[in-house]
Amino acid sequence: MFTMKPLRLLGINCKRVVDVLPHQLNLTTFLSTSCSFFSRKKKVNGYEDVDQGKYADLLRTVTTSKAGSQTPDSLFEEDHFLYGKVVRSKVPAQESDSKVPQNHIPLNNPNKVLLSVEKTDPNIPVKIGLPGKNQMANGRLPSVTRILQQTMPMEQAFYLERWKQRMIMELGEEGFIEYTAALFSQGKRFHAQLEDLLLSEEQYTQKPDDAEELVGYMNSAEHVLSHVVGVKTLESAVVHSELQYLGFVDCVAKYREKLCVIDWKTSEKQKPNLKNTFDNPLQVAAYMGAINHDNNYNFQVDCGLIVIAYKDGSPAHAHFMDSEMCLHYWDKWLLRLEEYKEKKEKP
Image (cartoon, rainbow, N blue to C red; front, side, top):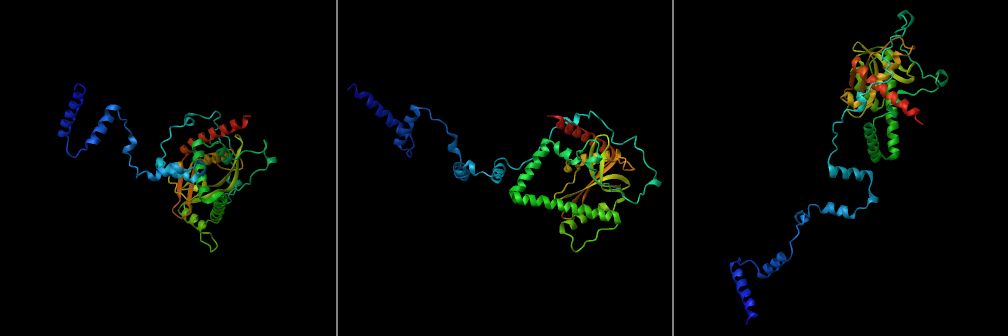
């Protein structure tokens, strides 16, 4: 009797609990879950609340893909899917902005002797070829283009390489080589056509054999050409006698009554702001300094102009650089020149 009493009490208590529970609740379910609850504390699993169907495709891709099957194209697609569109944040001020050139050569040359107008022909633009090695005291001189390429900032080099890889993905290695060769050829024809027009002082007239790209570039630059007069130099080599570098100037002429070094560029992409032209302002400043220190030229220049002509014929952007802006970019050029020389001196 004594041993049966606890069991009888348990049965009575269970009956009372069942009576107060809702009729829809199954007793077996209640007892099993109650025992489980009292036996151990249930762990919370956050994955149980995830919508399995929504992410089924992503899960299948992750569990079945192999690292070896990844391509640059698929990596870019994954970046876009995981992180969204790339947004360029503002870059903090570079350390070079606070630097000053150690050897500050002035942009203008106060010691340059200018010939009288009677001894020069203002109607014939100066056109000088690149000097040979035997004509230079220190052998081969570095070009402005080479110096800028060798000292390109890391961020700029990153975006240039990223553009190159995207183009190779779309066109392939051989296709990319053909594409760059075509761009070079188009630019060369554009410069040749500009030279003919500036020498003849005539307006551009489309010829039957003109390529579609050339027509687009010429139509784009037409409104700028109407303000270019008094050409002094066309496709001519310049050498900075003191800093020992050389360059090849597209044009020196008056633009809206200001004598400028003019750099003609072609582009398929709009570049409405000067910052979109990357190192082009430094290139123009370098050419200006070279002209001002080259005795082959009977003038000095303190303004610049970068003209971006577009393949689709849309109006070109003409970025004018006044004397103050040119001095700013001249200092930047001197820093890049010093950096180049330091790299060359290292073993």
